[in-house]
Length: 336
Length: 289
Image 1 (cartoon, rainbow over the protein chains, first blue to last red):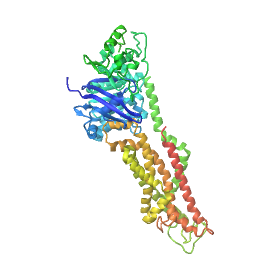
Image 2: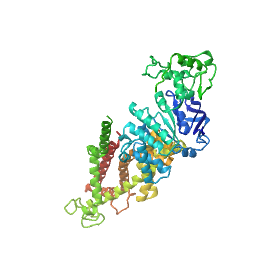
Image 3: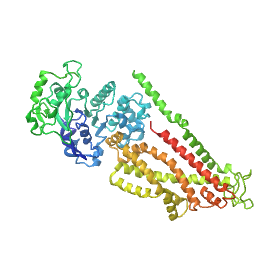
Image 4: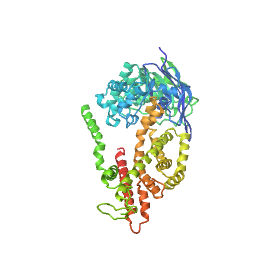
């Protein structure tokens, strides 16, 4: 296989707050290869969005990267200066945001917003940039682009806005697009259209996607590999099909069992008791142990390493075989 | 269903496009302000057409006349036509006031953008300067500055700029502090756009509305300042007609010819009223839904 486009190693991000330091991302590692889609799953506050922002150096002011490396296309993002990072943004890696209403400039016509990067980053003429904007609008499935090019964001529907957002993300010809919950703010029917569009673009333009979502169904539809995050750490990684069939971390199992299953493989819908820990003072040992049905005394002894399980799988659990046994006793969803 | 939804969106688009055109005449203060100010500006522009005497031509045989068909508002102590001086005075005072608001608007907006966006020491130093200027009363500082710099329109511009930029900086800085946290700024950064482009192309159009509204009421302050300076003999140089000078000149004859000071005074009040109503109406119209 070729070199990874994005290589993240042991990434740590800390927030300096009045009540102390909060480690929002703690030792996260993953690779994304050209043209591949990776899913990043977790609850709110699991550090997935912060990790994504850290990749392009756009953290909030209070946060900073305190360890690890991020390499995009062979460039060490941490060691590179702000100027070099800016060079990467847009033309190598771009972002799609959750809420297209707020992520689009309300007083700029959408055509201008799409044409902006071709104009200032790719050095196109005004005319070419405009044509490129129309072409991108057609590509993302916006009907009647000649007219919509002059529309303001609030004049478009939610789905159209997200298409515009995608067109902007594509406008610098990036090789990697970071998607931060791109369909969460949309209706279910629109959500499906947008996901299909992103998949189509990934196939046809050969761009790699990193998909951050709390929605397992979204990840199942779009990604081949995933990383499950909990309390700032990756707790399980592997191919989506493998992880969904046989999760090896109790948190992943809990997530899968809390998804409604209309094929009725299982009859009960469970939820994970408790809530995610306060990252300013994470629990001793395994961070999931206060909520874990499989907890043993050895779980509290110390930090749990990410254990390699073969086939590119890994889980941060000492008792992954017991989790697997439980799944064999009562299977989780296989639909999707 | 999709077609129906499209039609609804379509209707909303047209609705909005007509928004400003449809709403402006339903905003009473905007209509009143535009009418009053429009008439004054029109009179100032058409000054040679609506007067039959030069504003500076003296007629020492007909001084201190009452209103007549020849001199609509009478003549002053040098026999100059009061109506002509009033209309030409509007020319001077409005022109100086509009220009005097332009410089602090541009400079204050620029400083506010930079201070709000970058924060840190740039913001701290800016705030220090703002606080120093704000500590002095507006008129006192302007009068003192013009007194030190010498009279004349150029020095009026300089004095008003030195004092006036702080209001624009404070308004824009506050707006930028809120706006820069919005996702569209983050999106622009994630597209690798430069700070200058984000500031002027993305943030400025989103924050400048409040400054424009303030500029309308700021002109009122500037007109009052110019008139006050004229009254004190520090403003527009004679024999150019100016309302402040007219009030000062008429003061000597207040007991016998009260109208000489009162008429330009009323002109100042009406102009200020027109501008205030305009600012009020603009604030209503430009307020985001």
